[in-house]
Image 1 (cartoon, rainbow, N blue to C red):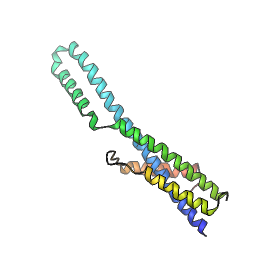
Image 2: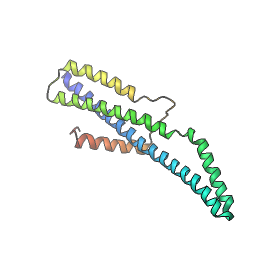
Image 3: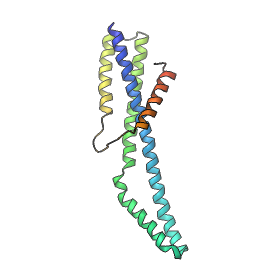
Length: 168
């Protein structure tokens, strides 16, 4: 009877761990997109504005405005540390994936009865603590996950668990 309770707890941890891995992955993609867009804007405004200013003298005020805009973006860029956030989330996402795989290994061990109840209970407790630590972010990071990201992550999680691991 106790093994059934542990299995149910493990199933919940598997879902939660997978969900957060998928959520972090979606956030990484979003932040990479923002970082790329910001860098493209800077590259285009910086290089083409100077070249265009010399070619089209009559629009010098517009090109001067573009140069000023690119300088403003460059000055404000440290306030939007997308690259730092991508690095932090990538690291956490990778660790979350490893923890998820450990949970899946435990799930398989329960199903083929290759580990006793005490061992599984101890491992589950240890891994759960690691997961909780991995999912905690400092205030400096301040990640917020949108409702759409949460919904998409939930769909991804359910799809992976059902189709790849046959966990319903």
